[in-house]
Image (cartoon, rainbow, N blue to C red; front, side):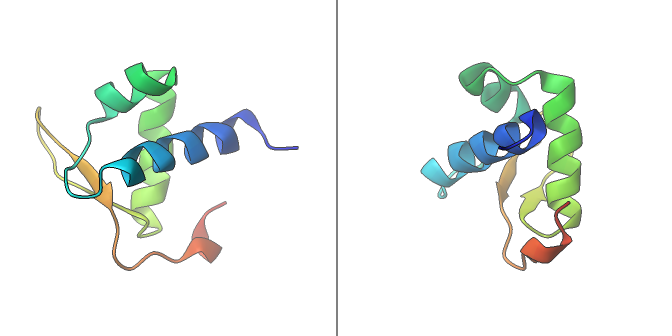
Length: 75
């Protein structure tokens, strides 16, 4: 059985994977997948640190799939 955090992580990563050519915003992922925005922001930080996501800062910041992911670092 997966935790709620794990379910949200999978949903977010699948959302981003659907459109690899364009980066996504946390706000749009949250709205589309029904994930609380603050919780999703914490999840995305963990994924970015693990190299599974890349992000651009700022009001119009975007998320995209990482290139040097190490799944063994995701907890």
